[in-house]
Amino acid sequence: MLKFTPSIFILFFLLSVKLSAQTETTDSLVPERIQYIQNELNQSKPGVNAWWYGWLAGYSAATVAQGTVYFLSNNNSTKQDMALGAATTFLGAALQVLTPLNTGRDAETLSLLPDSTTDQQLKKLKTAEEFLKSNAMKEKAGRGWQIHALNEAVNLGSGLITWLAYKRTVWDGVSNFLLNTVITETQIWTQPTKTLKDYQNYCRKYQSGMNSVANKIEPEYFLNTYPGGVALRIVF
Image 1 (cartoon, one colour):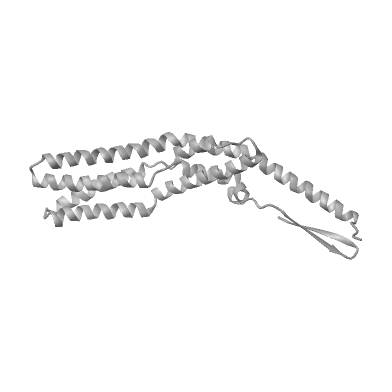
Image 2 (tube, rainbow, N blue to C red):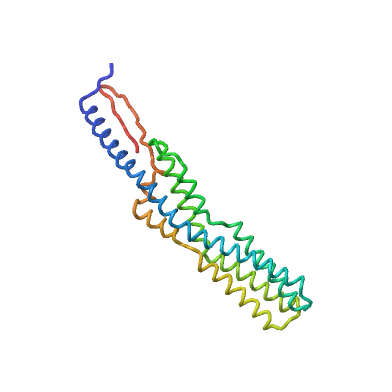
Protein backbone atom coordinates (compact mmCIF):
# COMPACT_ATOMS: atom_id res chain seq x y z
CA MET A 1 0.00 0.00 0.00
CA LEU A 2 1.30 3.49 -0.89
CA LYS A 3 1.93 5.87 1.99
CA PHE A 4 1.54 9.66 1.57
CA THR A 5 3.67 11.41 4.12
CA PRO A 6 2.47 14.77 5.56
CA SER A 7 5.47 16.54 4.05
CA ILE A 8 4.29 15.53 0.57
CA PHE A 9 0.90 17.14 1.11
CA ILE A 10 2.48 20.30 2.51
CA LEU A 11 4.90 20.53 -0.42
CA PHE A 12 2.10 19.98 -2.93
CA PHE A 13 -0.05 22.64 -1.25
CA LEU A 14 2.71 25.25 -1.21
CA LEU A 15 3.67 24.66 -4.83
CA SER A 16 0.04 24.77 -5.92
CA VAL A 17 -0.45 28.11 -4.16
CA LYS A 18 2.72 29.47 -5.74
CA LEU A 19 1.74 28.34 -9.25
CA SER A 20 -1.78 29.67 -8.86
CA ALA A 21 -0.45 33.06 -7.77
CA GLN A 22 1.95 33.19 -10.73
CA THR A 23 -0.84 32.31 -13.17
CA GLU A 24 -3.19 34.85 -11.61
CA THR A 25 -0.56 37.59 -11.74
CA THR A 26 0.26 36.86 -15.36
CA ASP A 27 -3.33 36.50 -16.51
CA SER A 28 -4.39 39.68 -14.74
CA LEU A 29 -2.15 41.66 -17.11
CA VAL A 30 -3.61 40.11 -20.25
CA PRO A 31 -6.44 42.66 -20.77
CA GLU A 32 -4.03 45.50 -20.02
CA ARG A 33 -1.53 44.22 -22.57
CA ILE A 34 -4.22 43.77 -25.22
CA GLN A 35 -5.51 47.29 -24.65
CA TYR A 36 -1.98 48.69 -24.76
CA ILE A 37 -1.29 47.13 -28.14
CA GLN A 38 -4.74 48.05 -29.47
CA ASN A 39 -4.22 51.69 -28.49
CA GLU A 40 -0.76 51.87 -30.04
CA LEU A 41 -1.90 50.31 -33.33
CA ASN A 42 -4.88 52.68 -33.46
CA GLN A 43 -2.64 55.69 -32.87
CA SER A 44 -0.18 54.58 -35.56
CA LYS A 45 -2.89 53.95 -38.14
CA PRO A 46 -3.43 57.56 -39.42
CA GLY A 47 0.27 58.28 -39.95
CA VAL A 48 0.95 54.93 -41.61
CA ASN A 49 -2.05 55.23 -43.92
CA ALA A 50 -1.19 58.81 -44.88
CA TRP A 51 2.38 57.82 -45.76
CA TRP A 52 1.48 54.60 -47.60
CA TYR A 53 -1.48 55.88 -49.59
CA GLY A 54 0.21 59.22 -50.17
CA TRP A 55 3.28 57.72 -51.82
CA LEU A 56 1.20 55.18 -53.72
CA ALA A 57 -0.99 57.95 -55.10
CA GLY A 58 2.05 60.09 -55.90
CA TYR A 59 3.85 57.35 -57.79
CA SER A 60 0.68 56.35 -59.63
CA ALA A 61 -0.12 59.92 -60.66
CA ALA A 62 3.47 60.49 -61.80
CA THR A 63 3.36 57.32 -63.89
CA VAL A 64 0.15 58.38 -65.63
CA ALA A 65 1.37 61.96 -66.16
CA GLN A 66 4.73 60.94 -67.60
CA GLY A 67 3.10 58.34 -69.80
CA THR A 68 0.71 60.96 -71.14
CA VAL A 69 3.55 63.40 -71.88
CA TYR A 70 5.46 60.62 -73.62
CA PHE A 71 2.63 60.01 -76.09
CA LEU A 72 1.93 63.70 -76.65
CA SER A 73 5.51 64.97 -77.03
CA ASN A 74 7.45 65.08 -80.30
CA ASN A 75 10.77 65.82 -78.63
CA ASN A 76 13.02 62.76 -78.51
CA SER A 77 14.81 63.70 -75.26
CA THR A 78 11.51 64.44 -73.56
CA LYS A 79 10.09 61.10 -74.69
CA GLN A 80 13.15 59.32 -73.34
CA ASP A 81 12.93 61.08 -69.98
CA MET A 82 9.21 60.42 -69.68
CA ALA A 83 9.50 56.73 -70.61
CA LEU A 84 12.26 56.13 -68.09
CA GLY A 85 10.55 58.25 -65.46
CA ALA A 86 7.26 56.39 -65.89
CA ALA A 87 9.07 53.08 -65.54
CA THR A 88 10.74 54.10 -62.27
CA THR A 89 7.59 55.57 -60.72
CA PHE A 90 5.62 52.48 -61.75
CA LEU A 91 8.24 50.39 -59.95
CA GLY A 92 7.87 52.62 -56.90
CA ALA A 93 4.10 52.14 -56.89
CA ALA A 94 4.51 48.38 -57.31
CA LEU A 95 6.85 48.19 -54.32
CA GLN A 96 4.31 50.08 -52.21
CA VAL A 97 1.68 47.50 -53.09
CA LEU A 98 3.99 44.53 -52.56
CA THR A 99 5.41 45.72 -49.21
CA PRO A 100 2.50 47.31 -47.33
CA LEU A 101 2.47 48.41 -43.71
CA ASN A 102 -0.57 46.62 -42.26
CA THR A 103 -0.92 48.65 -39.06
CA GLY A 104 -4.41 49.94 -39.87
CA ARG A 105 -5.75 46.60 -41.05
CA ASP A 106 -4.26 44.75 -38.08
CA ALA A 107 -5.73 47.29 -35.64
CA GLU A 108 -9.21 46.67 -37.08
CA THR A 109 -8.74 42.89 -37.09
CA LEU A 110 -7.57 42.89 -33.48
CA SER A 111 -10.55 44.96 -32.32
CA LEU A 112 -12.94 42.35 -33.74
CA LEU A 113 -11.39 39.35 -31.98
CA PRO A 114 -13.48 38.00 -29.05
CA ASP A 115 -12.08 38.32 -25.53
CA SER A 116 -14.94 37.32 -23.22
CA THR A 117 -13.17 34.28 -21.75
CA THR A 118 -9.67 33.75 -20.39
CA ASP A 119 -8.77 31.42 -23.25
CA GLN A 120 -9.97 33.97 -25.81
CA GLN A 121 -7.98 36.70 -24.09
CA LEU A 122 -4.78 34.63 -24.19
CA LYS A 123 -5.27 33.90 -27.88
CA LYS A 124 -6.05 37.54 -28.59
CA LEU A 125 -2.93 38.69 -26.75
CA LYS A 126 -0.78 36.28 -28.73
CA THR A 127 -2.25 37.65 -31.98
CA ALA A 128 -1.81 41.23 -30.76
CA GLU A 129 1.86 40.65 -29.95
CA GLU A 130 2.39 39.10 -33.37
CA PHE A 131 0.72 42.09 -35.08
CA LEU A 132 2.82 44.57 -33.11
CA LYS A 133 6.09 42.75 -33.77
CA SER A 134 5.35 42.16 -37.46
CA ASN A 135 4.60 45.81 -38.17
CA ALA A 136 7.58 46.93 -36.11
CA MET A 137 9.92 44.69 -38.10
CA LYS A 138 8.48 46.01 -41.39
CA GLU A 139 9.14 49.57 -40.27
CA LYS A 140 12.67 48.62 -39.27
CA ALA A 141 13.28 46.97 -42.65
CA GLY A 142 11.89 50.05 -44.40
CA ARG A 143 14.69 52.12 -42.89
CA GLY A 144 17.38 49.44 -43.28
CA TRP A 145 20.45 49.61 -45.49
CA GLN A 146 18.98 47.03 -47.84
CA ILE A 147 16.18 49.32 -48.99
CA HIS A 148 18.65 52.18 -49.42
CA ALA A 149 20.89 49.95 -51.52
CA LEU A 150 18.00 48.69 -53.64
CA ASN A 151 16.78 52.20 -54.38
CA GLU A 152 20.25 53.46 -55.20
CA ALA A 153 20.82 50.54 -57.55
CA VAL A 154 17.64 51.41 -59.44
CA ASN A 155 18.53 55.11 -59.46
CA LEU A 156 22.05 54.39 -60.70
CA GLY A 157 20.68 52.17 -63.44
CA SER A 158 18.30 54.92 -64.52
CA GLY A 159 21.15 57.41 -64.68
CA LEU A 160 23.34 55.04 -66.70
CA ILE A 161 20.53 54.37 -69.17
CA THR A 162 20.07 58.11 -69.65
CA TRP A 163 23.79 58.61 -70.24
CA LEU A 164 24.86 55.50 -72.15
CA ALA A 165 21.77 53.90 -73.68
CA TYR A 166 20.16 57.17 -74.74
CA LYS A 167 23.57 58.66 -75.61
CA ARG A 168 22.97 61.81 -73.63
CA THR A 169 25.57 63.81 -71.70
CA VAL A 170 27.01 62.50 -68.46
CA TRP A 171 25.36 65.44 -66.70
CA ASP A 172 21.97 64.32 -67.90
CA GLY A 173 22.68 60.94 -66.32
CA VAL A 174 23.86 62.54 -63.08
CA SER A 175 20.78 64.78 -62.93
CA ASN A 176 18.52 61.78 -63.42
CA PHE A 177 20.30 59.87 -60.67
CA LEU A 178 20.20 62.78 -58.20
CA LEU A 179 16.53 63.54 -58.83
CA ASN A 180 15.49 59.94 -58.27
CA THR A 181 17.72 59.69 -55.20
CA VAL A 182 16.10 62.73 -53.60
CA ILE A 183 12.64 61.25 -54.18
CA THR A 184 13.41 57.75 -52.90
CA GLU A 185 15.40 58.94 -49.87
CA THR A 186 12.57 61.29 -48.96
CA GLN A 187 10.18 58.36 -49.12
CA ILE A 188 12.41 56.27 -46.84
CA TRP A 189 13.02 58.96 -44.23
CA THR A 190 9.37 59.99 -44.06
CA GLN A 191 8.23 56.43 -43.38
CA PRO A 192 6.67 56.22 -39.90
CA THR A 193 8.55 54.31 -37.20
CA LYS A 194 6.10 54.75 -34.33
CA THR A 195 5.15 51.06 -34.21
CA LEU A 196 8.81 50.08 -33.92
CA LYS A 197 9.21 52.38 -30.91
CA ASP A 198 5.93 51.11 -29.47
CA TYR A 199 7.12 47.51 -29.76
CA GLN A 200 10.38 48.34 -27.99
CA ASN A 201 8.47 50.12 -25.23
CA TYR A 202 6.09 47.17 -24.91
CA CYS A 203 8.96 44.71 -24.50
CA ARG A 204 10.52 46.91 -21.81
CA LYS A 205 7.24 47.50 -19.99
CA TYR A 206 6.06 43.90 -19.93
CA GLN A 207 9.36 42.06 -20.40
CA SER A 208 7.77 40.41 -23.43
CA GLY A 209 10.79 38.26 -24.25
CA MET A 210 10.74 36.61 -20.81
CA ASN A 211 7.12 36.87 -19.74
CA SER A 212 5.12 36.78 -22.96
CA VAL A 213 1.87 34.84 -22.95
CA ALA A 214 2.86 33.57 -26.38
CA ASN A 215 5.94 31.96 -24.81
CA LYS A 216 4.44 30.90 -21.48
CA ILE A 217 5.46 27.37 -20.45
CA GLU A 218 2.85 25.24 -18.75
CA PRO A 219 3.99 23.25 -15.66
CA GLU A 220 4.34 19.48 -15.86
CA TYR A 221 3.60 17.16 -12.93
CA PHE A 222 5.44 13.88 -12.25
CA LEU A 223 4.39 11.48 -9.46
CA ASN A 224 7.06 8.98 -8.38
CA THR A 225 6.57 6.17 -5.87
CA TYR A 226 9.21 4.62 -3.68
CA PRO A 227 9.17 2.24 -0.68
CA GLY A 228 7.54 4.11 2.19
CA GLY A 229 6.24 7.17 0.35
CA VAL A 230 5.49 9.16 -2.75
CA ALA A 231 7.47 11.99 -4.38
CA LEU A 232 5.90 14.75 -6.42
CA ARG A 233 8.10 16.53 -8.98
CA ILE A 234 6.90 19.64 -10.82
CA VAL A 235 8.77 21.02 -13.81
CA PHE A 236 7.93 24.52 -15.07
